[in-house]
Image (cartoon, rainbow, N blue to C red; front, side):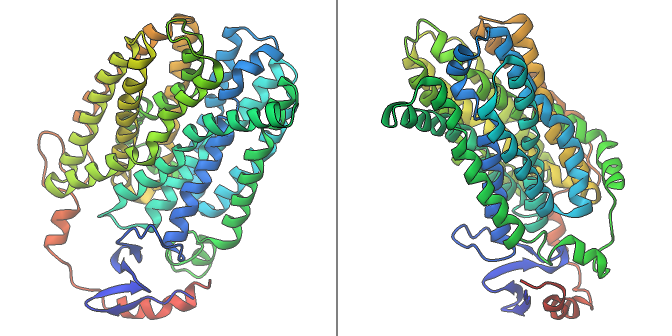
Length: 482
């Protein structure tokens, strides 16, 4: 049982300091711990999104071979890329409010189970249309990101929520880099070591990510918790917290203009990342001046995703630092700065004609793409706390809307001219940095004024401890059982 206790002038669960006024959320990120509920939720949140991401983009590094065996043209490849991210949009809109209703644990388990089924079905595609269907439904797994951010926000206190969100999302997004290397390595094993043909090798490669994802799904449903006080179903039933409906959460989050403004900016960072994951390996393999093959192209493309290991976290840290210094104004400034630099670096990447210049440009560009993503979700928890699921849904969905838009732009305007398309994207990204100016978040300051906001100011005037706090802490073991 979880037993929160007061000692040394603060509240703790074991060695984890918690904030009772915020529902016993953790005040530290203890990376080497796997203790329930905070750090176990933290690690399973990023691991689940990581696996979903690997399955979601498992086709991308193998598309060179799939294109040959299914006799696809480049336009058809782009259509399947667009469908792979389009499938996520409505699912992200729906899953956020569902987190408020049934809890992130059940939502994440359901999404991972779904994506395992369609990853296995990926082995059986035999035509352009069957590939379209499988990639579209595989895209539903991308909604695991919304659950990850909701889950982390539910577990960690406001002082560190930007860093916590950025780290779980960044390590999850790392799946975009790992899948480029993993699928190529598994293909090479079946093709080289086992001696199978090209087609059999890429088909059997889908077994590996499906099995790993299934294991994580089972771990979540059997060993994790929705919140610091236990699963939402029990807390609702016992009246510990007020019951929320999916409709109520959706209305609160989706009718807030700030959700949509931030969503457009998220389309210009996470949407860009999804588009790069779908196209950059093909770009490296097909541009004659680079002079590299498909296997090497996949390995180089994986560098973009590998930056998630620390880049997204650094964006969250920058946002938290801005909050400490300037309140919400600091978070918004960090957001706009990262977007502007991201756009400039993408333009530089697009103009590289040799692989020796393209690789460092890709790495630098990737860093700021993911740092911007981290800064974005440092703002999300403040927009409408009572409708958090709805806000996560809107912002998260816009990431995929952006990816669809970028894909359509390339399909109809830059087919065969990837470098010019990447350059145009850079200018659009720079322009999106202006949206921060128009955000007005209740109780927070903004870019050019407003009352001083941010968690720093609330801490200065410490409110008296509620009389019921000791009772709540004592009751915690009865509310939550491990």
